[in-house]
Image 1 (spheres, rainbow, N blue to C red):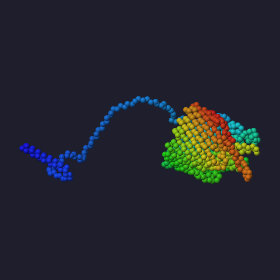
Image 2: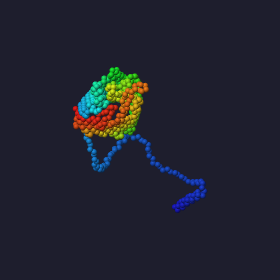
Image 3: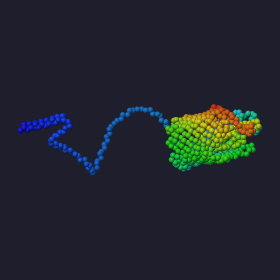
Image 4: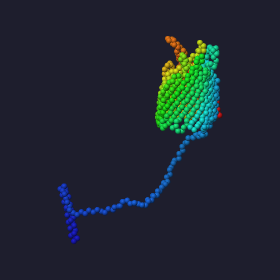
Length: 590
């Protein structure tokens, strides 16, 4: 039985194999045919183990997982190293340096030259302050072969200031007396004899100017910049000379400013009244000139991180002589490159300027007793002048924290610029001396190329230098009388441990042209006119050296030497200066 089943199974297997072989053979020989295999197929899919991932709510609060921190012990190896430490300077100062109420200075020099000066004030006070100052400086002159050249200067002033909650109020009294000698002539025996015959003593060869005045000023101290800041001042001067000419000047000025955001609105206001009476003498009628000058200079400015701009105008009404109206543009612009290292700038300016008896004789004290013009009829020389325009541009900046510079070019035009020429004083019909000055006005264009350099280090060394090269173009005169073509000034100050202070100054002035005015007659028409005789004024170098030794904080010794080069140069035609002038003395604080 078993054998039969085995034979039957063998047959089945063999049959299946034969059918598969025939099928392979037919597939190889007959491509593209269709084959059918009959049988029973029962596919079975295995059971899958599935997970139920549907969300279920949890009502319990999850516990916080405790955090653990483990410290890993690590040891840093730092190598030992020794560095050198610079020595430190220990400077112990009081919170506020002690101030002394008084300071006195006295000295004496060549040519019988005494010097005295005194200061006294209140020192520190939160509510008020007051002080007085007086200075005297005179000399016997000592110039040979010239007229008497003695001079003296006396100045005194006293002030009082009150500090209110938001204002500062100050009042000041002023006195100034200047005595000069008309020594600009060659002194010889013949001239001395003529002066004695005409009974002209030394008092007739000198001039004295007395200036008495007072001033008051109110200045705002607002901490809020949006309020209208103001600085209002009143100044009155009564000015007279030995001849009898006198002048009263009342000047009221105000500076206003209001800031809103980056813009500032403000300007200046001026009211200047001048009353002058010149005593001509010789039976001539006194010269009287009154006039008021009213000016307003409104402006608006803005400032950014790297620039600032200001635009305004000068508006003036002048009633001296005839009433005239004047308008001048005013503007300024600068731009900061690399912080404050380089600052290019440009601007234009113009204004009407008061010119009076006081301003003329302060610039040149050897004018006639009543300043006169260089004309045949010798009209009054009191005339205001105008800066028509001043167009300038330049570059300023800092090379380092110690060195600064400023290079500038300016082109300007001034109408009625006062120039000074010598006049002839007749002692008799034969003897004439050119010892006094007349004024001639001209319309002058000026080109000024200038440069300045400063150096300051540790508050012990200060160096300054400036050069100006001028080019003048007068409209009527042949030369810009007494004006230099260039000017160079140098200055140095050295402070050695607050014990020894040395100062040096030098001034170089180029050769100039002076003139002598005299009356002439036109050979054709016979009309008189004023002619000018030109004279050369050499350039000069004026050197100054000063030294001060502070023996204590309160007592010191000083020595000043002026005109160290001993050059007998002429600042004004026929008026040379003293040679070496040495003055020594002491100072004391109390």
